[in-house]
Length: 490
Image (cartoon, rainbow, N blue to C red):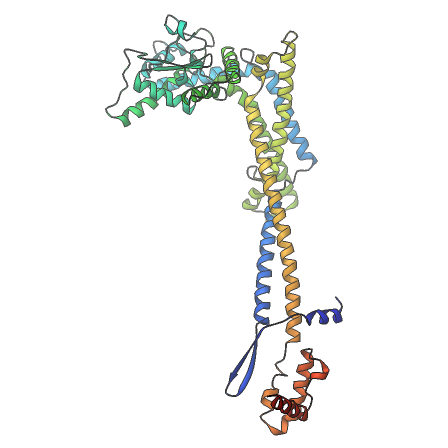
């Protein structure tokens, strides 16, 4: 900046100063130095905010290189192949058979905890029958020989899905408690919510108070679901387990709309009918668990590969005497950092592309000229879609937050720049108004032998204040004449 221009601009700057009189002495009190001190403190605070904001932005920025992306995509491909060939669809799933057997064994274990004696009969149907009696409920109409088979179109293959209290959801729990208190049974059939009164003449909810009955009702709901998770006691073959938590919401929508007296749309009915069809083909909670296996493997593989790469890098770049467990964990932990989250998004996206592609191809092949929607959804990995949705939501949230922080950092940097200009201006003013040596002319006038120096100081002060040269009083005579003119004018 040109010094002359700076001085010219400074002429237009006004500073308010206080003049105090005490014991025949004068003193000018300027606020410039206070303002300069405050501005410098504000600048330091602003720089601290900028540093913190930039650090947060860096923490939201993934540091994936090409190898990270390649490893994540490879994991997605491997797990996609596992899904296509080992998960497949209900009834044709090697992993599904393993899952069914594991859940069946857990049903036996739960029955033993509840008092089941397996010495006489150790079959799964014996354990299930014991649990059905132990956790008796009034809404277990199966359609076979029941009036419900005609009224509700119930059958042993669909009653777990249509019965709301058999649904593993919050609404399922609500209707289970309601049915046990009122001895009723609620079903969703063909887009309608149907209630059966006096569902079981022999049922009585245990408990001496409402609180104890609520507890017994909850225990009955949980126990009965666990008894049905591997099918009913009279099931032949695989049996019909409880509905998938990710599909039984189609019943919840119809039930809620009916209770709120909102018309049920054809779309609601179509989706509910699709969910029923895939359930009848074996898509229950057990198969939903099977679908979660390749998704879990994908999750673990990506996190493991991330940790191994960072571990090798840490060992090779950090001297032995500088190593510590806390620094190692900070470098390798595969949970909270955005880099591994980006890798997971790529891995689950790749997995879903392979899974959805296989489902589409199977739907076209088995459709006979049309697209087989049921086949498509039987093979579509809903767990994988859900996990990818969570990753995409996280990416979107981080992108929005990062964008906001970058804008905030820009504004803070602009603020710091303005404060710097302000500080430069204050420093310039402090130089112009640094008058401590010149202002002593007030004291000099008290001594007759120093009056000439006082005049010189007053002249310098006037020039410093940019007083026009013609208006400056340079000698004692000028001052006397000035006051005489002032007196004559009065």
